Image (cartoon, rainbow, N blue to C red):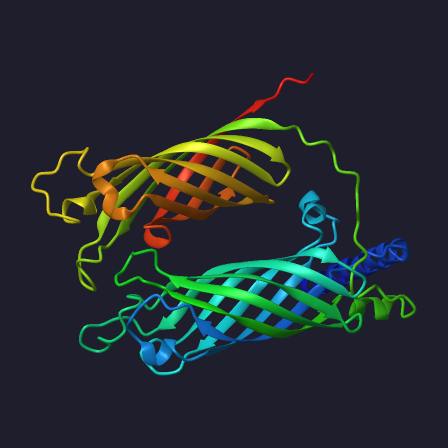
Length: 398
């Protein structure tokens, strides 16, 4: 037994020694590489702004400003791994925590956990102008309750989707420290899985500080104290291959559920489904535009806007057409569609609807998607959870 333990310890020491030698060899080979290591950031932001009022309730809260704090950790892309790094001008990807403070007690002080992407529109030596998208899940809302919280008629769930879009500037004080100033829009909603669901919309300014670091610097000191990997990376720019423009047929089907505004709080959840067909033109590595057809089935139509006894399939179905755009980032795509109804019996939904969501490509052709479908312009109707497939048709080369 003792012999086995001794042999195990010797093997561990040998493996550790070989690993150290391998690391030293890789470090010596990397001395001339300015992209060595991993460039990470830590952000802290303070938000201040106003509600974008969409309700006559909670005036004591919505007439006052809000405050929020935001802490995030991210990875600075340098072009070493993916062509999309260079296509998006070397963005930062990461995760964050958001905590907002409202005046008054009916809404609570919710928090959110989210993923984000921040990319420069213009990048200078010290100054940059950036855009940013973040999406995640929030918790901690005080939801509507007819007994406990009757005045809060804005949002009917304590867990909601968090979405943030921002644009702003940053200025580099040193290799390690930056300051940022952003204008941002924030949205909380549950996609009408519970009512009421008018949603919470915020607009404000965010002042932040960023700290950059390269964690491998601590390891290199033990191997070669004279070598200091850079804190911020030198970006790797490669010649981009010519994009093979092509067209695609995109099929998508979804299932979901919704509640109605006529049965607030404890009403039933109705089955909904959708199907769409897009004809799209892929014009660039990161984008494609399309035009398509939508078909919807919504069992909630049996009770709203007027109650229908023994409804037929056509009574619960409606159709539309849309213009679409797809923005590709690695395996993810941001999908935005503007649609127009062609069915007369859903005029209570307005004339225009939006579909905004994200797709994840399991393979190049097969994807899953979650999207918010709206009514009356931008009012949440229901969430589409579904699966899709795309067929590509290459253009004939002249």
